[in-house]
Image (cartoon, rainbow, N blue to C red; front, side, top):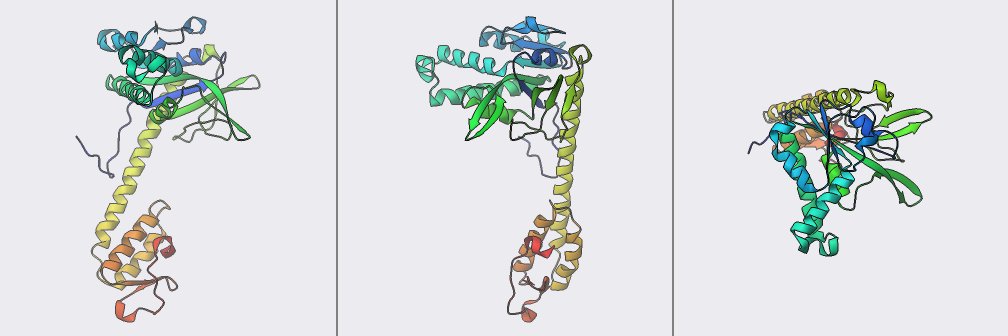
Length: 314
């Protein structure tokens, strides 16, 4: 087991995308625009899609198991598309009821059964990534009412909804705006979403012009996640550099000289470095005065000394 240090970046070779939207908006047709896609047709509706590419019609979860064991059959494909993820989870549920009926009495999952369902789905996603495949999940939409607010989310059964959302790196809502299709990854008060890349909504080309739309978007998403990881690693590395530097301070004067430099740090770093400085000063018996925003040696500390630092130093 390798422990990845905070100062190291984490490669995201195969992020998981999910798109959801109402029936008839050409989700499946758009899904075929993934790079070298093989579509797993759980909904048995691929025949209605325009621009259709290679497809496997899935009737039982055993079909998926058989496919995953056939490495040669999967070799030509860069991407697997699950259409739809809701129906995929239904087939796993049915398989649990057959193979372990105690966890699905009467065909309905028990609490343990829900745990098995989430675990099996998560393990399958990991297995797809291990094969070096990109993964797109397609879902119908469903409107839920939260008080007086109606929110659209992927149509995924029960407790498995949270598991799918955790596994998805990007979640986009496909909808019509006038005569144009729009794919929006931003969460709003009207629908859920995940948008770590900070994308603005995309106008989706017509089916004939969208043959590689998701392939390009997926590549952008992979790059964006890599950049986020690199940035996080740089932040952690800078904080560790400050930690090492602060550890050498022995006087209030050295602590005070650090304050102007801490003020210049980005907002995500300044509070962390401030806390490091406060803890170190306290350990050395150096007092910070909140009113004067300065450190003093114990003998010269004002009576109203306050040990709160955090962002007050800044």
